[in-house]
Picture 1 (tube, helix red, strand yellow):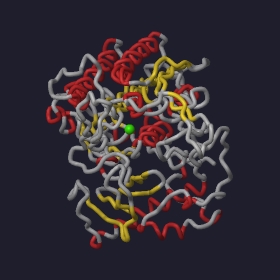
Picture 2 (cartoon, helix red, strand yellow):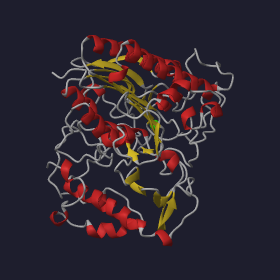
Picture 3 (cartoon, rainbow, N blue to C red):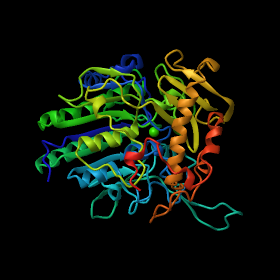
Picture 4 (cartoon, protein in one colour):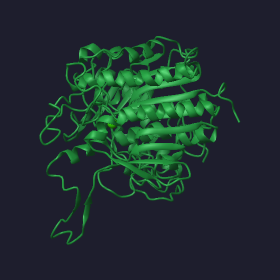
Length: 518
Ligand SMILES: [Ca+2]
């Protein structure tokens, strides 16, 4: 058994829909009505990433973080809307499972969104010793706030006959390893307000128990703010006198501080990696009432800082989230970097930092960022980011460049492929408004090479279709065509002709060789 002195504890804050520009160290804080001194101090003591990239929606971002794989691989590329075998198949190996196998105590409290079946696809089946979770998403809280919500079964005559269609509020589950799940609450407005405080309390209790047991721990904190409906805890509602959003920033800062204070009190801060980030970019500027009547005054406008766009798009306001990494004595305090990092890299990097095993029997998209994060290298080593929106490969980033293959400006707007990709230099044009085209078309070669290599890996290891039930076993390589799973825009049309058949296109030099054990 490894000892805690050799295996760092890991505390992973994963806020929901927190835009790049919300907290003080990213230009927000007082700009948004409330300072965030604890979060800012955390950044000053660690590495602050300016170009940390995530997937565009809640479910895919969570699967990418926990599996180290782009969600197009695992059937979790989109938020599931209704029923079915939603979430991850049990074939996936999560960071929680790999750390558990390496001797860690593992716990999560908050939003899961990777399977609504509490007995077969809960956090516990994916490696967490204990968990309290909402299976889906906070916006279902809004249902119970509407006078129209039936809160029971309905029919859909004549097409569905007498079929009773359940319309029940989202439950909150609790479960420990070896036990069955228990519903401990309904996810309504009251629970919503109190959830993040409870998450903090449960995590603090867990860390104390893990320390007493002499085990390193992995604490996954998928906090639920500031996703709609952003309802502050009663202690914070009205506290700033600057609206509920500023109240929430204060609340988030305090809860962050309570977790950090616990690490100090337990005497383990020096042995703990803290990551503080968000699953995707800001919510759009919603303009509909929360409830009937609306008690929250419509302050629902997320803030992406200098970037344009909201989550569910492939604009930078969706791709980039704040990301702070503190590892005392290891990661250089106060370092700020615009190097490309993707959330899948956290999987690989944290597992290696923990001395745990990165799975070698499947495609892993994460890179080892230890040399970069520990200050041994100025460059992250990542040149490219593939920006998916559902099954669309909607944009490709390569160094400071970005090509949009589809036009989509808002969460709910339509999309269309560009006849020619729109190329932007994000240093010249942070808001992605000015296409620069021909003088720089050479960039497309590097981008297409990244896409081609990725497509080849999908031929070698066919993607799992969304809604796949368990048990899942991977089919033989080459039995599915990669291009059937990804919508490609103009820049990659030639890629589809290159990835057209099976055996002849198995990967040879894709950059994934070291992680492909198949
Ligand atoms: Ca989210």
